[in-house]
Amino acid sequence: MDVGNGRSTLFWEDTWLQGGPLKVSLPRLYLVSNQQETVIGDCGFWDGFEWIWNFQWRRELFQWELELLHQLHERLRPVKMSIGREDNVVWKFDSKGIFSTNSFMKILHSETLPDEITSYSFTSAIWRGVVPPRIELFGWFVLVGRVNTKDRLSRLGVIVHSDNICVLCKKEVESVQHLFLLCEVTWQVWCSWLSSVGQVWDTPETIRELFEKWIGVHRRKHERRLWLAGFFAVIWNIWLERNARIFKNEVSGVEILQRRTILSYSDWTGSDLGDGC
Ligand SMILES: [Zn+2]
Image (cartoon, rainbow, N blue to C red):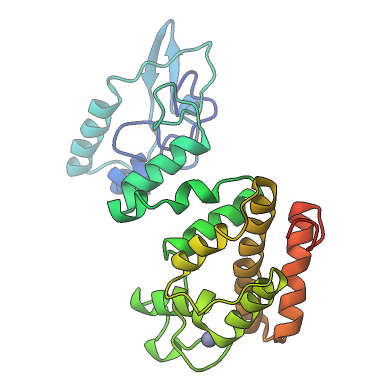
């Protein structure tokens, strides 16, 4: 937040100073503050043109807490409140402070991913606006292996190790590669799409390899765009089916799954399978 009059920024909870939210860096003071969830503009008052901070506590502060209060005032010293200007959300990863998907992707790449992935060519192939943005994002997570499959969750300690079996085939460990590519259920769905364009493939080794081959199926631009939606339709419906089985105990067979992928495709592209493929 770029703070003006402090009327729409939470003093303790929002990020408006270097170093993140104050409740994180000064948790003790936050705990005894009587102004939790209070906007900055209510944590002080104007004395003429000068802003005076005025904090309220649940009880009198101990000596060592006064030291923390001193630290707080030090951090607040550079703050210039402005009576007539609204608070503004700024996007700190852009020099003009304006959010764009482009800068978001750049920061996501540079902060969280090794070079091997950022330089990988699928990145530009995926953001085509063919399917809704959240589906594109999901596709991107699948390709970089950042989906919360059971295998990943058990590695992170979220679920027990013995519960990491794929719910589609109940045979193998549910990893990204398995769930979206190698699983016998999933592979049948991929094959039904491939057979619609008269292609037969050996199973690629990784989902990225499949994606690269996939986008090479059509040469004409329009067809290629439509065909890309098919890729998203498959991984998205596999994910929905997997979640329905785990969370709702609902099981659909391969044929229904295939039909759903075609429905998603039509929804997203506005055309029937066959128009462009
Ligand atoms: Zn499986």
